[in-house]
Image (tube, rainbow, N blue to C red):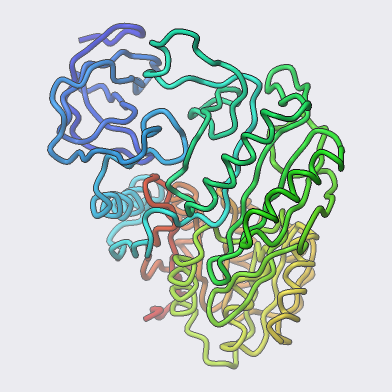
Length: 466
């Protein structure tokens, strides 16, 4: 059979590929099917074809897989927030473990590595401590909404349809955040509708209301509301802040980030403090962290403890070591390890993150952590000591090849590599495998109902990390 774009085919889904799509073969040709599960029998339409594979969408479920469950969220299948709700959670974490192992084998040519069962998230719903909702002057309708008369296609505040920048679903409630966040979301929706200020057009780049960001402190059960607008109008946003602070005692901070930039990023060019505190505090025991509107903090507070405990276990610190932490962010890993090492030096390119790290050290009375602001490619050349242990926690793109070379030149005794992308984890470990042996990899699930997975890899020069 020769697959053609736009044509329809009946397929038996045999596997779940990295990236979360169903997998099938037609005469040896690979087809990836969005929202398909192993053992589904589906009618699909081919929407794209490359040299070695095709992409398809389900147009009819001929026979659903016995592995499927009913997704509890009404937006499942349309919203891009979480795409695996139709899979039981125990299967989700099994597939995540397998995808890490397959990435190491197929992309990194690294075999016979112990990839442990995935550490599950303590909560599989209401686990996110940060949510960003986009505003749009035109809502994207769910299939059931398209059949009625007098359809309202106006303003939306919610989440994007996958792979688009302008399709925004008007979300009444997101199950990934605590319910109070949904109450705040709906009050903000009503306020925006009743205001005289226009909603931002994602194509026209005109309008006022742009994003709503909600941050929740798990340890304190407090909320920060960040209203992102295209221009400054203190009177209108101050009225919204007053409404929220008066109605919800748990809302302790309201700020307004202002940006005229066209980029669809919920970060302001500057910030206006509206009401309450300028930040909130959360804890990854035993440490407390101040979190401002634009600070980085792990979005699953409860699962972050498992992640950092894994890092600590692999680092095998005795209190005498010097640790170098690359991509140190706001200093959460150095602070978490501070009581186990002699000193820790972190390198981070974002200066505001360095400021947050230093502030959090003072907050926790940590005095053996130091932070260097700069590009790691140049800052590593200025390090005048050999670290006993190196912690590497890069962004999704992984390490630059120049950084890999410098890491190997520094030759630490042990490396702990924290990754949010199995593909770049495999690539970077492959670049180091002639110098370091991968002893063990521990997946940690920070993002239930998505295919995303954090992994911690333990690398040793000669002896293992156990």
